[in-house]
Amino acid sequence: MIHISAFAKINLYLEVLGRREDGYHEIDSIMQSVSLADVITLSKKETGIEIISSDLRIPQDKNNTAYLAAEVFFDKTGLPGGIRIEIHKNIPISAGLAGGSADAAAVLFGLNNLYQTKLSESDLLTLAAQVGSDVSFCLKGGTCRCRGRGELVEKIKDLEKTWLVLVKPDFGISTKWVYDNLNAAFIKEKRLTEAHIPLSAIHLYNDLEKVVVQKYPIIAEIKKKLIHLGCLQAEMSGSGPTVFGIAKDEDSAKNIFQEMQKEFPQTFLTHSVNNGLLT
Image (cartoon, rainbow, N blue to C red; front, side):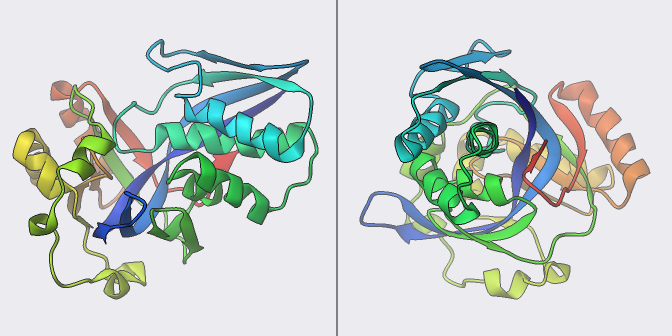
């Protein structure tokens, strides 16, 4: 049996470069792991893949990325064994925080340890790319530049410990819907990602926010409230709807968290971390 904390991610910077021939979109993003985490417990069983979740909305079949991660692992290794996957959800679903991808990364990492298969990091990243676009980042974690459809992960200098307040409105958003509604009019001409590395120069940005705010103006309102309460910057993460604000220090973050939680129950006090998984 093994217990793994699987950390959520935020996008400090997200450019969409256009649609690829395979139907996915090409992105260039700076992703950051944060301390909000699901807890994954893996236990060996003789055969099959079993999923149990604290959130009953989580699918228990191939529609769950954790299930798919186990499948590709057993296909790769040829092992006859099975796995019981218990998921204690703390990361909101359909929130732009890569909760499902983090769970899948934890399964790949945990199975490799549990079955002592000694797959290399490169092997695991290859499997991760088969499972989902953000799974590779969640395996590597910390502060990374992610390109391609998100699966090309380059570690960059880790962000110094930064306190954040995450605010999720009471609805979820389908990533597919966001990208389906993204068109050239939403994509700016000038590409700036290079200018935001090192991170001392970063100004939060997200191409996808333009699409989401049109339908959900509450995103812009949350950003304004976070700034009004003292956040240095605020931005939507990924395909949303979670908005995160960067606080100047821990005390400020706690005060902002307490105020935002009065209106938005799914508000989280968190900070940057330098890895995607922790055992």
